[in-house]
Image (cartoon, rainbow, N blue to C red; front, top):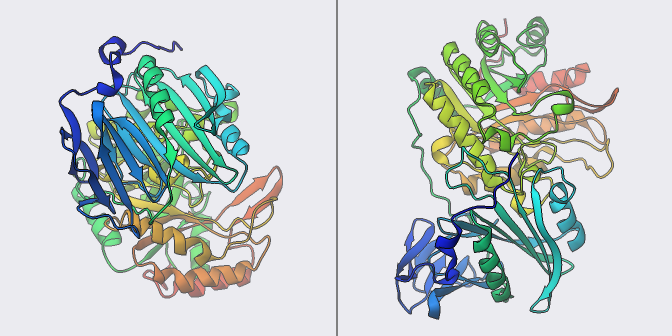
Length: 541
């Protein structure tokens, strides 16, 4: 595939830091500081809101306005200051994860990364898909140098131009500034012009310096429940019934359902419970989606329909992000959307879940370390569904509770496509047990207390569901874990639906993680007793 280095170069090159002659100041709109006519007084932000006085115990950031249309950003919770062109706007909505500076042609994301590994391991692992050629990009430069006394690693590359992305910025620079063995700052640049970055990167990196840390970063995301387009009456009714009331409801993943329903029906008799929701997986291999949905509907089940944009066999691990955004899978997506529309009844549609895990080929880890491309894919597929009139799908956005790699540029918040494209926040956290080296046994509340709290900080206005979860038996007491889950679930009132993943992760022919609860009568009994406090108990057919 041809990779283009051409962009709007000469037009924006002349004096990069003087990119807007008339603007050197800022106005605050929501969580974004935008350019305004020049002023001398600094702009003070506390917890994402403009104010007149700093609060050093909270999330304080200060913008100082200098000469030659250059601003200085002082980020106190993350402990740094940096200069940038005054025409760039500032986004602090994801402050615990990153601070973003951008204009129409360039975007800069700044991450403060505490390390639990060596700086070399952090840099090398994060860049590995690019430097090994697995990520099909063209490397321009890979270098190390000292800047202001700090070792700085720089990787420059260009990826294929994406024709489904407006004003695509396909030229990248990743700059890792190593402060010490436990702290690193990562500056991610991308632009539609290499020449812009040739000027911008050295000036911003040279202006970077560390300052004493003060306060605590907080999220300040805008909140809205306005959809991009209206739901069908039936989908709206399902949203109100299951996700806006006080009750919690259960679902299950059982691989044989709905094509071979009898096993689940027999299991429900043992549990004295009828599951409202079932989980079904689909990918780029063609399957009769409408037929699957109709089979589940015969048993009055709502399907959590998962589409993972992956292939099978040798094609399983090949990233598709660039191809999707070049229209390669347009016909597949159009046909898929038509089948969901033809089904007509409500569906929970979960797209590309666990995207912050490097086991998923649609993770940013495999595509230029750029989570914004995941957002572009989400919005692009959403647009196709909208054009096909798919108003019966409730969109479920669903990262994993732990990021792999556990680097801030791979944190869930970076992948959020925006309120108007998401109906339900999906949570996933497994107790994987200790079969594999390095894994640890985690209790239910050990997983879900912090996961629930963080998502409530970001999305208190959205309903939650646990899209899939479970516990292994290897490494601890599975029965006690099940009982804890049922005993503590009501501590999370914004979780409206919970789906147990009744399956096995295999290590070749060996069951490595057995999440099934139906392997012995004691676990079945624990689940049956736990379900009795929920709707649909004692009603299994």
